[in-house]
Amino acid sequence: MARTRYYTCLVCGKKFPEGQGIVIRRAGVELAFHSKACFTRFCKLFLERVEEKEFKRVARELMKEFEELQKQRMKQKII
Ligand SMILES: [Zn+2]
Image: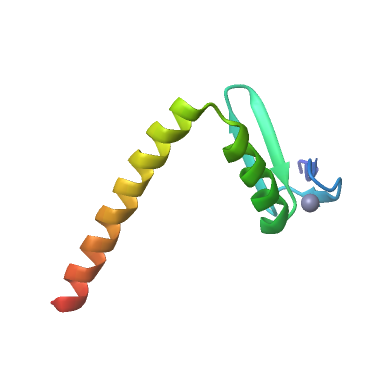
């Protein structure tokens, strides 16, 4: 049997096994967080530092997506 992989939270340094915490892999970068609190802390800094143009584009896109989801949910409630 394969051994459980352990990750180290990049915010607080706590170790946690695979399947727990939050692990994000993208563009060859792996980001591991042991808890939502550590993830939130990282995200806040990330959002503050990411390039403004990209931030605006993605933020608006996601705002629209969530708005649509909320509208759909409202419709379902009425029916
Ligand atoms: Zn942590």
